[in-house]
Length: 208
Ligand code: SF4
Image 1 (cartoon, protein in one colour):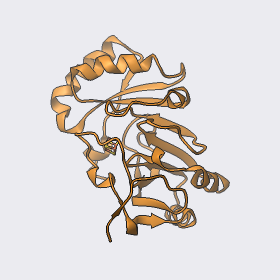
Image 2 (cartoon, helix red, strand yellow):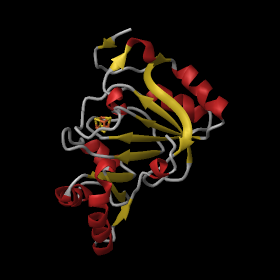
Image 3 (cartoon, helix red, strand yellow):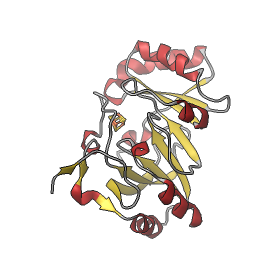
């Protein structure tokens, strides 16, 4: 089985992996969550820790019906759709089916394109390589900036001006650089209290 053209899908969707775990980061940190990691990413950050998700393989496709079935079998009530860049795909049918079955839906996106789907929680995690579109700034419930260096803190303030007034603001150290960057983030959050710290607690817990 080989890679196929990077393009948008609706049903079936290319799923790189799906698993029931704990949301480790951001506003919903600590909450039981079923993760649906969709394949395909057109952003391609150099520090990406899920590079395997960039391409789409022929054998990755799962119908929306079967995605629902796995979520129900796991007993999950909260789903996080992530990637890759999940906004590449039309998620309207997946959202509709999950909603009809009483499942809460969050998405983690770079926001580099309009979202298709009805989400309960939108976590916007912008990437410099492919900036968010206006519609996602307006819709975002959470802005989560991955901080790799000092300049990212300045960039974070610029982006905070673009999101809606109710959007929760998080600074998260990039994992490979956490020791160096965390003290800077701590100082920033103490000085400018609109920001909160997000840590990848699933990595401390040694879970996915
Ligand atoms: Fe990796 Fe996410 Fe960046 Fe895509 S947007 S390259 S999946 S970190």
